[in-house]
Image 1: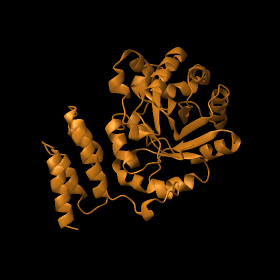
Image 2: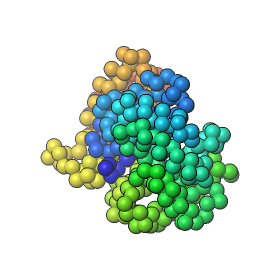
Image 3: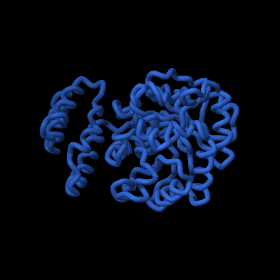
Image 4: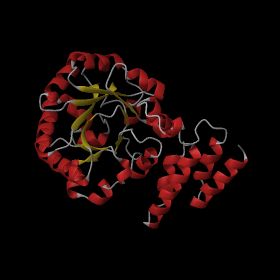
Length: 320
């Protein structure tokens, strides 16, 4: 069971972003953006589901609340080659509220249980649930345990808990990531009360050392925006989280990562993928380095070409 994951992030963790992350960690579990079951059933499956084989282990996160649709979409995901299917029970956006899924589902745990049961009847791969610790008027730990009890009874044994409540009214999605206070203690207690379940934690984790502290209490930990804005953190995941010391303990350098990603971009560009749709994910590669601002400016210009990245690497080597 993966101990470390990079969170699903709308408009961010697309296939190009995930490939970039995989260059830094071979062991981290990667997640897609949330995709609705209806979109998968009726939409462009190639655009929504395609991924590079190097992205494994890879989780497809589904949004929806109709058990038959969720089962159908999950089966398509399994056939496409995903390693796990996750049900989104944490997103508080207007879109999910109007569709009665995402964080809304915390108020109807039996609906989530029905979705899990329908999916497990169809799938041979694991099904997990990613939720909040509560939503709106859910004020008690007992309400959280009631949710977990009902859903786990349908066959789900893996829960990833964002340690904040979601306020569906009064806060927008960005505010819901920061304003509700973190309550790690509830997630820790959940693991103690449900020893038979795999319990993961998400929310506010900013470093690999913090991740390791959480792993003393729970089974898995998830980084979100910290990983996106400071992606080189992921280069420490394999040796520090998994104790996987390969290549004589040498951590891959930023230059090596960039060179490998350039080769990937060349291939994708020949398939008509715009350069900027890929370079936008690597803006933070040099976060904390003396020339980080120069790197960001290079990638934020009106025209971005692969040759600019080679020029950057030459400049970097001459200024080390």
